[in-house]
Length: 214
Image (cartoon, rainbow, N blue to C red; front, side, top):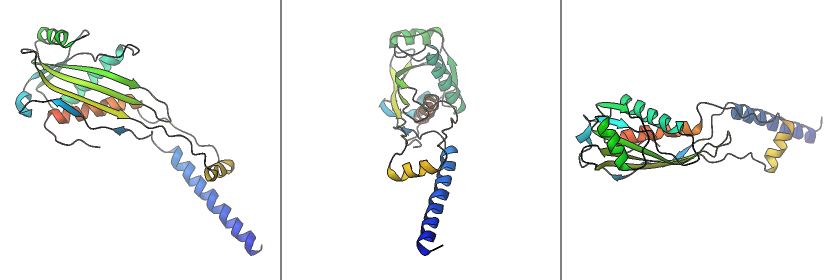
């Protein structure tokens, strides 16, 4: 084997080993990472702890016309679990029925005998695929059921970029000599994960945290 042949042999060995390593890492990888924006607070109480001992009733989230109504009840249940788990308020319960405006939410809160009503709205939601593309935009209002005043008004958006296959010359060469990449599903759907993360962020904000996890 001459010197040039040896060099070519080593070159291909490096490519093949590197390609195998890359394939293994891709097969074991998780979903495409989500880029989340921090919660944007428009209205908040002067004292974050003023309502810590209050009871909260959560309405099923209002949804865009093209979404299944069951998603609104599921979103409310996620917020209940997280608010209870973080002990943000003294008591948290789910309220039945739908609401179209703040007055209807207030009426439901008074019937449910709670101090505050959490009226959430999914402004936009896109499921995406295993290659990414999921998006979520939601708004939450926490309303004083007695006075009708908005105590908290928070909005948040999250985006999951698309992860397109790399088609440059090097990757095309690697793909021609290695097995095809296998994309595996991992964990809950991206929108459900986004919703849970948003609930955690908003619960932290209502508890007085200045910065949420990125």
